Structure formats: C-alpha cells, structure tokens
Length: 559
Image (cartoon, rainbow, N blue to C red):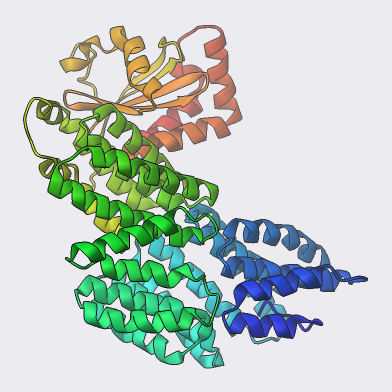
C-alpha cells in the first residue's frame, strides 16, 4: 500500500518499515528531483511523500499534497491511487479532529471502495484495515467508544489475515487505547502487551508509551519504569518520532512521584520540550498540559494566584501550536481550560467568553460530546453567576475555587484523554424567536407559547434595553444571557441578529438556531425577502413569506 512498483521505492519502503520515517522522507524528496520522470512516476513519488508526511505528523502538508494529486489521479482514472489519497486526507483530518471533513472524505472513500471491489480483482485488505481504523478514530472522537472498539477489532482481523506486522501492532495498540479510554485497564494492558510482542519498529515506541501511561494511571510506577527503560533503548536506535519522545515519558513518570526533586526534574524537562518548536506538535502539547498540571498542583498547595501568570504563556503557546496545526480538539479544550482559570480570578465575563469560543470550535468540527459538556457548564455558570459574584466578597481559598470551577476535572480530562462523560440533556422549551437589526431595532417576533407576553416576568423591559444587551453581551464575544427563568441565545447574520428565547438547557437550542441561520441563508427566496423587509425598514410579515413560517415550525416546534 502506498508503494507502487516504481524505481527507488523499495529503499523508501524498507526505511519506513524500520520506523525511519524522516530518512524515508528525505529519500523520496531526492527521487522527486529526478530527470525525465514520467507522470506516473512523479505522481507515485508524491503519493508516497504524502503518506510519509502523514506518518511524520505533518498532517497539514499531507492533506495539501494529497488533495493536489487526487485530482490528477482522477483525471487518469486511477481508482486505487485516488482511494489512497482520500485515506491520507481522512486520516490527517481526523487526527487534527476535523471530524466533519473526515466523515465527508470517508463517505467518498466508501463509494470508491465499492466501485473498486466491483471492477478490480486485487487484494484490498491492507487498505481496508486503514480505512476501518480511520472510521474507528472518528467514532472515538465523537465519544462512540463501543463502535470504535468494534471497528478497531475488525482492523486487527484484517491486518492479521495479511500478516502485516505494522498494521497488527498499530491495530492492537488502538484496541488497548480504546480500553484505556473506557478505564478498563486490565484489558488495555493485555492488548498493549500483545502489540509489544509483535516487535514492529515503526509502532513499538507508541506501544511502549501506551503501556507507560496505563501503568502510571494505575499507580504501578515500578512496572512503568520497566517499559520506560525499553523505550529509552528503542529511541536510541530509531528516529520515530524523535529523541525527545523518551524524555517526555521520563518526565511523565517523574511527575507521578511524591518527591520534590523528581517533580522539579519533570518540570525542567517539560519546559525544554514545550518551547522546542522543532519537535512534533503532539509531543509539545502533552508536555505543556503536564507542565500546567504541575503548576496547578503548586497553586492548590500555596494559594498563590501569581502562579496563574506563570501558566498563561504556556497556555498561549499551546493555543499557538493548536492554531498553526489546526488541532481543533486542543483548541476547544484549551479555551475550556482558560474559562476555568478565569473563574479562579473571578473574572466571570472572561470565563463566559472562553466558554463561547470553546463551544463554537467543538460544534464546528463535529466534537458533539465535548460541545454538550461545554454547553452544560456554560448553563451552570449562568445559573450560578450570583454565587460566583458573592465569592468576591468572601475569603474562599484557591483550592476551593478550583473545586467549584471544575478545573481539577478539566485537567484530568486533558491529561488522561478518557471518553468525555456528559449528563443527559433535555430539549429546551421554545418561548420566542426575534430578528433584529444590528442596531437593535425589532424586525420580527414569533411567540411559541400563547400565554407569554413581554409584560411577563423579568423580560418586561427586554425590548427597551435591547441596545444595552447587544453592546454589553454580544459585543463582548458572548452569545447568551439569562433573564430570570429564561435564556436568551443570540447569533449574528449580517445585517441581522437572531435571538432565541427559551427555558431549559441550551445545547439543542444552540443547534436549532445554527440550523435556522444556515437554512435561511441557503434559501434564496427567504433570504431575499428578509433583505427587502430590512431595506424598507418594515416588520417581517409571515403571510408574505409562507415558507419562512414553515421553516420556523420545522426547526423550533416539530419534535
């Protein structure tokens, strides 16, 4: 797979199988420079290069190159190579946690896979194993752990059928990681040890890392050190992924110690790794998260808020890495972490802003369970605003604030990468939909309950203070506010602002208003009609846009 019968590729394959990915990449770069290359040779080299970029962790470059050559392979009618480029893209997108894009590509690949099996007689099990593993990753990131487990087992069976040691090792390690996510440590260890016995150089470091993580999490540091020693020996021989890979796990083991000198050594290693921009993004990210955890442990003990200022540059570096590499899960999780830290300093407006950013990221890239978790936490903060305001007048310790903010829980999630647990969320009760100009003038309103009026409850003065609400809430990057028993959710759609008033949880309300905005933009008649009402400064009349009324009912009322 990814290695056509083209001159010079045998050495590249050999290096790759030995785990020497960077060396393999250099060879293929030199082959690309050859004279008088045929189109088939050049495209084959580029396909191998795209895959090596994927294996080296340079996912954005892998995506761009795979996109480019996909078009060329399509023109040539090369179905198999087209399928390969789709797999490279889908894998790279899922690792950067752009679930929506990855699912689209997997759907394309699935259609192509069926066509290839109908028209060509080739052994496709190796490709199918990777294809199934990508689907498992998608389900895993969506929190559908059982489906991910079954798919990883299927990938393992395919790999075993063809006797591919690299795929066998990777598949077994994925099964181990899935059980680790499920907190079933004994099963995780069993599968990780099976992967270890395969002794595949390309994935052995990853397998050893999995075993170290599990044993540290179990509190068995002695056993973790056994595998740490083996990791040191392995990384001295191979360049996967880099020399600092061992040091990051050494720091991880040291950090679990109760001895001050071990934790200080761990901190020094993490600082070195965190700021070394030559290292793999994932290695640096894990180092920063662990470093932040060390600082927060110190904060919990000392109650010294100055420690937060020491943490902030590392959090910014984490955001910089995640933004540059488009690692969307880490962006959303880090914004959530920022929200928790803002609560420690009792900056509620800042905390709400970070929660808004976090949910938008999670929603945009298909991280459903994380989006649900963030939405629940945002709702809870809005309900508890007065209690948090009262803390400013009290002498609650920092450790108590950390507990109240859920900061400890957030760090556990980021450190251990277990499946996100969210409570059951009921759908909201719709109250009213409003469309306003950006200046706050009301163009449209629709009540969803007959006995509701603006004279009721705290919303009585809502319209008269609309400009204030928009400037104080919306302009601060926030998207919601609470008025007594009601929640107001706002989203912009130039030249309008759409406001949805409801009672209950906001998660499904958020999805509804997003769907509403997308739908009216995609319906030319509705969108042009709304623009006409706006330009004439007239209130929107439903009897003049019957399809608009039907759309509102479909999205906000129908079950």
